[in-house]
Image (cartoon, rainbow, N blue to C red; front, side):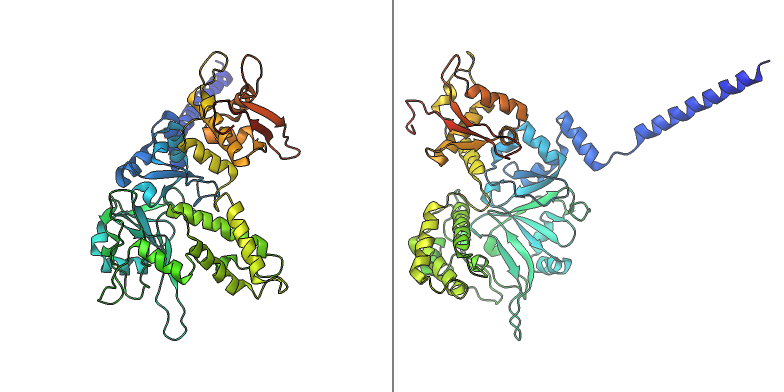
Length: 459
């Protein structure tokens, strides 16, 4: 009898059983939430997005961010509820952290962010109706979510009333509305998960019905109106005393502010700290003014702009060149206001993309390519180039295939070939002229010039 062969056979059988058990164990290994999210997104299932839209309503605009991030410098204020119909956009949401665009973008949805549990509990004691509203938590404190049924203030820091002796005020949280976003799902930068403390739809409430806890400074009286049937008159707001102050409409408040020449926002962040910074400071303040006008959905008056400059000059005059007088700096402020095109968080590309998605397609999108009509994404690419050229005037514009691919949600190689097609002079009229070819070495994108058709009013 061959004992050696029998032993080898038994050992081989044992090894096969061990390998099989190990494979079964690996197959049954619990996947991480991140792996589950990626698998669901790949299959076209979006359970996190569906859950959030069920809680927040179909009108909520959700924002995709990298895992473990509270947001990046990537523009997002051009996003609308129409993006929530895009499968590619939903897939990005499902795979990372999810934020919510607040204010009018999401039909009056706002959040009250408290930095500590103590202030959350104090606030809920003063507002028992909000104990049943949606409440989420990251690393500390909580966000209370509400849907305002009428006018509400712009975003502001929630502070304590000044200390009687030192005059010090402490930041305890933030009222977040138009122009802000709050992370609601995913992983906090510290590594913990965002969780639901109270999983329920946001309570609908008028802002003036919110009671502010003892010790908190009353909210500002100037309100943002919802772009709908809601009243344009700002309602009364509660003070810390039992009495209420008479309210003013947003228009009346603006008129008072303008007549006094008071600043419509804090200018201290734009004050130079040393010589040779004043021009850049005025430019930055002009960009922030552009942001304010966009978020408030109105143009500022001459008196409001004067109020900003006078407040800046009062703080800055001790830090600037004494040989340059008030009127020279005022002329620089006026010049910056005329020359600035983009808000704080905008670039030429993001502004053009927003316009490409909100304005009618240019007539050139009807030009057949290779005997076929352009698909909609290619039409959007043409519209993007159209808007970039309008912003540049007669000068050429820069556009990389990678940036175009990200905006359109297509591979950058596809964007490259589409841009090449649009510059092709064979078999039809070109839509773009390539002025210069970029390279990785120079870190410059290709330069193009848009060729307007004879029927286009922009040509």
